Amino acid sequence: MTIATPIPFSLIVMPAQGALRTERKCGSAITIGSATTCDVVLVDADVAAHHATIKWSDGSYVLVRQENPLLVNGLRTRVHALLPHDLIVIGKNALAFQTEESRAPQALTDPLTRLRAFMLAILSGDSAEALSKRLLDDALALTSAQRGTLVGFEHDGQPYCLFSCAVGLANDEALFSRTLIERCRTTLAPVVLHPHDAQSLAKAPSLAGTAARAIAALPITDGSRLWGVLYLAAKHEDALDNAALELMSLYATQAVSFLRAEKRAKVLEEKLCELGQSEDETSSLIGASASMLELRKSVRKVAASDISVLIRGETGTGKELLARELHRQSPRSSRPFVAVNCGAIAKELFASELFGHVKGAFTQADRNRQGYIKAADGGTLFLDEVGDMPLPQQVALLRVLQERVVVPVGAEVGSSVNVRILAASNLDFDEGVRTGRFRQDLYFRLAGVTLDLPPLRNRGGDILLLAHRFLDTASRTEKKSGLSFSEPALHAMACATWPGNVRELEASVRRAVLLAESKVIAPADLGLTGDRVQSEPVVKPLVVARDAFLKRYVQEAVAQFDGNRTAAAEALLVSVRTVFKYLEEV
Image (cartoon, rainbow, N blue to C red; front, side, top):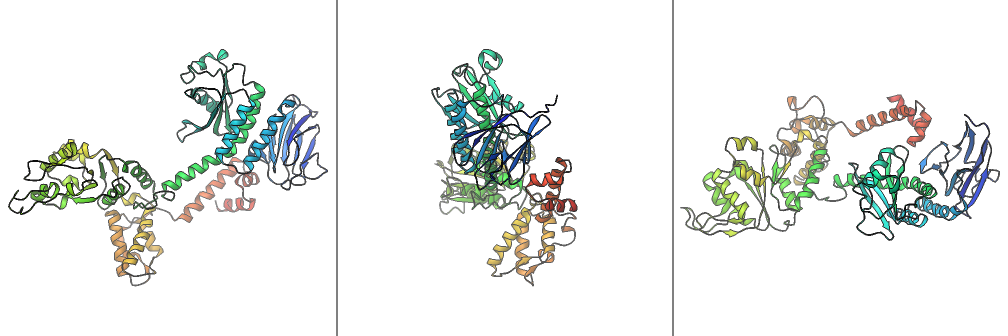
């Protein structure tokens, strides 16, 4: 049943300047602004003369923004149906909306003063850590809780502690109950536990044995997405009453803004890290494709260990480059890096080259020789094309890996060696083991970790990224400045199949630098003609991809607002003209 007559309400005003005050109102339209003619006057340079209006409509009060932005519960809005305890931010002022039934008692004067200070700290741009500490300090001061925890969520949805503080609780108590957090995340509603009336939850493993007798999990949400949870625990069963929880819910609504900003900053930092812009800028592994970003991440994890690594990939993908990068990022970087091409050593010389020999071991052994393994002592030995290693030497290498002792050809006693083995091959090891070409036990020893280098044709925009890097290097080497690729050359490189992978691309660019008769390199200079080029490009130009995304995104935004272009423009923080521009092009 619709209530025709407006009901009284109160605005507890926490002004930018001056003391906290309560405005009691009742009427069909209450104006808010800096003009002295307004019903609620806010002295603030950021507040418009007539900033907003609270109107009675269909049995409830509705806040309507007239000029300049405002926030309700931390969210930008134009029209909002007000509910008890909603918190409105206009300029540097905070207004708590209360009906007569829910109006805060005088005892809340200090809490609201604290809340105003908390909101001003948010508006001042304090760090997420400082705001988290302020929030939890206020929570413990204003409630009877002994522990407060801000809970965040990982990418996979797992909860973790963002910040925590405690008074009078044992250090080994659980910071939060995953059972309650999961229920809070599922319902997007507060979850309150008093053991005497919630026995099923009280038996949860994360709550067993805890001294906390009253627990509350309050969602920090923007209405549709959960950004975190404010988790409070108290020793007394009658703690965390409704008044305390309503006050903490106000805090939770304001925490949305800085938790959302912190999450976005964290995602941006991770992206920058993946692109190599915030760390490991000297990496020789060039590329921004998903496969290369994942590979660089794996290299950072594996490099610090001494575990053997097997590098797999097609010819020309850069297996030795990857091995050198593993060595560069390892604690062995100041020690030798020795690369051996197993496919280039004659079978009869393999043992001598790899393990060394003593004088007189065979006819041509006129002096002692240190093998590759001993030469790499303390550092890294890279065995390229390890699949070409003869079977007898596979047995000897397995012994070195197991015993860390190398025995030169013709010697009776070996010497200890400390070397990390990296190996590479394009051999299908499953097939090699099945046919007896490669020992299975050695394969397992070498493949402590396996890293796969993607073929160039699957790396998208990396092709052009690498091409420009090779052009710069070759131009400096050949002392030919001012060279650039033509648009057809860029298209041809992006569409080429590159069976020789990165090595072939590098050779093509260097040849073009040498042979190009003008400053602009054409497809013919690169040897890219005919069936060497696919019909469709691997990657679209960035400007084309960007425009396509923007058109689609604007169209989806307008659809979410049921075709209301004005509302969509406001949500997108652009002008209506901009929205029309993209819609006309869709």
